[in-house]
Length: 315
Image (tube, rainbow, N blue to C red; front, top):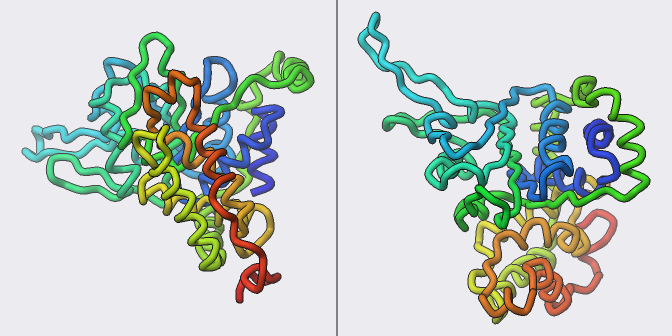
């Protein structure tokens, strides 16, 4: 995973925290939503991560005229055989890069719902399974920008994490100009891992221990988002599961085989903030979902260290 991170950082300069969340999402068997203004490297991040793993990769450019069948595939009538044949769409790949997902209509966006949740596609009453690993990395522009459709709550909830890249600092931007102005670093990027290795790593992450107290703390944090007056819709039970999976992945990337509360704190904002729907009053007070998650983390009591946090992560 360090090799993958180093490979991605050759393209996305000066953003190690963003790259780390992308790797956490990969190991947590989730999907990543990258939201920011144009030109900060959203698509470059998605492409660099996809190219760092030797597996099948496809890219979908979401546009207003894109149809659901352009994503999932379509059955075509074969005159020679007299039967319908299924032609698979770009979603049949290990890593699917969806560029500017919120420029397509909600009807087309919904084509990803089944595959992101159940890792399968149903076309004309026939269900087709997708390969392991499977990850959707989607980019989107802020909803205030012209020509965008806001993702519905059900769609956002299927993304394990959302990150915003932000503008680089001046030193990182200068390094980018020096290194990238003459050529595109994506063209020189070679895979440093493969699908089989990633699946073995995912298997290791599944076995990372999480003590009962830490599990209860994760549930308490998610439940607290449903009780905040500024929130109209809190985090779902699906969010709880992905919260714990992301914490396990973060612990593994930190070299531990057990989860501590700091792992939950590290992934709380990327995993929970995009799922929350604020009230009108909260918007008027210029409160953000990130502010609410931070307030919840401060309010919910952290389990104290003890025998549950020994060197092996077991009692």
